[in-house]
Structures are given as C-alpha cells and as structure tokens.
Length: 551
Image 1 (cartoon, rainbow, N blue to C red):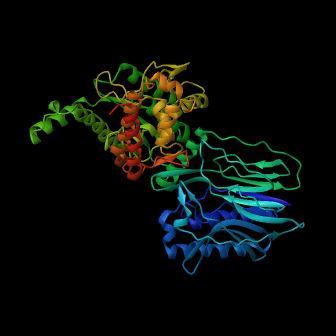
Image 2: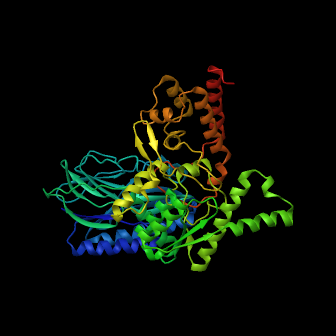
C-alpha cells in the first residue's frame, strides 16, 4: 500500500488557504498512484485559536470544509484533522474518508500548558476500526496513542519542546504540523517530524520544521534515518514564519547592538534566518559603555555583513533630565539611580522606534528568559519590539546557542569573549553580563543558579521541595556547584537570595504582560504563578528562617 504523508504548515485561522493546499496535495497524490494521504491534526483551521473556538458561526464555517474533503475521497482515502460542529457542540476530531464514506475519532480533551481543550471541546468516545484494502485494520489516534490495530494513524499538532523528546512506538503513521501558531504572547513552534514505523523499522522520517510531502510503501523493507532537530532550526523557522505571516516577509528588522551576548545572539539569528539585507543594526552608547562592547558590536556587524550605525544618546538623556528639571521641577540627580538608568533605556527605545519608522521596519526585542522572569527590563525602553526571539531561553541556554550559531556561520559571529569558561566549581568571565547603565555595573543575577530557578521553580519543582532538598543535601547535581560558587551554603545567604528572587518575580510580574510576543521553545512558558501559591511559598520561607534562627 502506498501512502502520502503531508507535514503541513497549517496557517491558523486561514481555512481556505489550508484547504486549497490540501486539495493540491490530494491531486498530486492521485497522480502518484497513492492509496491513502494523511494530513495533521486540525489541518483545516489550526489548533491554537484561543477563544475563537467559542464563535459558533466561525465553527460552522470550519466544519463546512469537511464536506469538501469528503467529496475529494471518491478515488483516494483521505485522513485529516478538523472539528465536527453540531448543535452548538464542538468535537475535535480525526476523519477518515473513502468513496464518500467516513469514520471519525474524537480527541479526548487534555489540559496542556499551551492549550486547554476542556474550555472549547467536548469529549466523546466515538471510535471505530477502519478496514481498508488488503485486509488491513487501521485505527485513528492523536499524539502517541496506540490501539490494537494493524496500523495506527496518529495525527498531531505538537509544538517543539527543547527539553523533552517525543517518542513513537508500534506500527504508526504519524503526521504532525509544522510552522507557527500563537496563543496570546506565546508563539508555539510546530515541529513537524512526521514518520512511519512498522515492525520495528523506521520506513520514513520527515525533516523537522519544514513542510514535506513523501510517498511511503508500507511493504517496503528499506529503512530511513531518524532525523534530529536543533534549537537553531526551531528558532529559524519561528522567525521566518512570524516575519512572513504577520509582517508579509518584506519589512526591515531593526536591532540595538550593544555588544553584549543577548543582542549578539539575536542579530546572528535574524541574519541566519532572513539574510543580511533585512537586518539593520544600531549601537546606542553612553559614557558607561566600554570600548570592548562597542568593538564587539562593530566586529559582529562586519562578520555578519550588516551595517551597524554608531552614535551616542548622551544629548538625548541630558535633554530629558533638563526637561524634568525645567518644566516639572524634578532633579534627576537627587532621585534614585534607577531613574537615570531608565532614562537611558527609554532613550534607546525611543531611538530604535524612530529608526524603525525611518527605514519602514520593526524592532527586535533582545530580552532573555531570566530577565523576562525577573522583570529586569525597562518598560518602553529595552522591553519594546515586534517579537522576542530569545525570551524563552535562559542565559545558560544562550551560551550553547551561541556556539551553534558560530558553527552554522563557520566563523565567530557571536564573540567568544562573551561566553564563560567553566572549569570545576569555577567560572571565568572575560566580560561578565552588564546593562552598562552606570559605572562598573554588573547584572544582579547569579548566572547558572538563577537560570536553574527560572527553568524549574514553580513548575517542575515546588518551593517547599527545593528548600527541603537544600536542607537534606539532595539538590540536583547540576546546581550543587553553583550553590557553592555563590556562597549559598550558608542558610542565611541562601534564603535571602531565594526571597530576593521570588519577590523580584512577584513585584515585576506585570511587565510580562507588556512584553512582545515570544518564540516559545518549551511547552511550559514563563506564565506567572498565582498569588495564592506565592503566599504559600512565603510560609515555607518563614518556616525555614525560624528553623535556622534567621528571623
């Protein structure tokens, strides 16, 4: 039996465009003598539509395309994912159609980090075995479900998660979507990777993060290589899809190139994804910026082949201070230092937006996940931008991505001097991270340690379990060296730092709501914890302090 697998870039909400693409592939499959063609879950409409699923008229419209696809099944079997809408009830389903007859399997609802099925769809145990050609029994499934059948046809709309591999077992025809679909601020990157396994052999494996059409003979003995995916592939696809779907694939992208790690990685990512002609760099210095960071920006721009205009924002900051004093009687020199630092950040934001207006483009946001989680940014300053490509990546993850980018470019585009050298329980920085908003400033984050807390605390690891593991000496081996490096073996220092970390998260959580949409490379993104949980966490901390006499 010959089957066609279609790893499809499903455009969320673009039903006509998606169905036209599906019909083109069905026509191609007919010409190729294919018996069965398979499309992903929610191939007609996309999966992450949010509260659009509550629009009854739109759901009727989405459902109407099922009849069009059934009409195409007169001489070829077709499998696709879409909703079935009846009497104000929505069922997320997989369809098998052949010669006008259909089978349907309803997806059982899940509460996923990026999608809550229960808010939109109803469960139903509709399911039936499908006998189709050569006495073969098929079963319709979702994700990695397995039923007792000769072949399982599994449809999916699964985003990439850099920390978790997805495994398929049994005799399976697995088809996943690729492209991007967003839910609020989170841009989920559908990873593709469709495949066919039979009798313990991989008969075919599609590349990740790309559209793909492939014909597979289920009786073939030839094995295919299982493909690998990388973080760089995921981000590249995400940038290209956002650029094309949201902005039409034509606008220039403006980036502030400080010479630090975050902007260096982001500039390299956009040049790698879109080409050097689409990226415009600007270095916006003050007297606090070192010659090292300025030369980093120059050198990277030269190696990437992009223009990076240099200038100073000193006059703009001075004029803002003079306006505050002359017109509103506020003397910035008498205010907390943060006021002056924020003036600099907002001056940069003002200029970057102005440059974007001049060239007819949009601004790239450079924030990383630790900064986003702790609110270490200035609203309307370095928090601006059309999209955040690295906001779901910690600083430590950026170190690895930097090396991957340098390998991809086959030269040092991200300066190696920005990357730490770790040996034993020590770390050496040629250039420690700094916002450079005052003299001798260094970021307050404890890199590696706080990265670990951002990734794990409140999601995989509760505060109470973390404190208990600290007391018992059973902390994750990955974090123990950094506890020692930062002097956190002392209970007083440990709990003070934990309190600072948690209170900073809580105090600045409102900033997350105002940041640009972010490319997500984890299923569980940087959603804020609720206040009830925060109060419980405070109780654990107070109990710890009481135990060690630290109150």
